[in-house]
Length: 68
Image 1 (cartoon, rainbow, N blue to C red):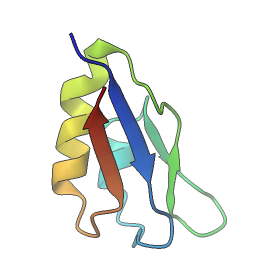
Image 2: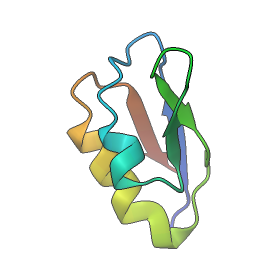
Image 3: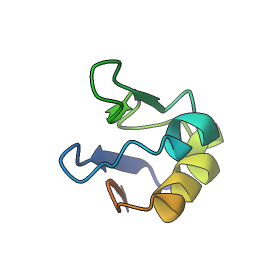
């Protein structure tokens, strides 16, 4: 199984929080401004589906995912 490499762009993040609600083991929100905080840049396979969904659902396209 391919490994996922996740990146976030805090400048693009609009703080909606879908990622933190959908995959709380991989994403959180910063207390100071509500922007995305990446907890797992290389999430384990059990989180892949949720992380991919987060990238798809992000209204600001602030989550990037690539397979390595």
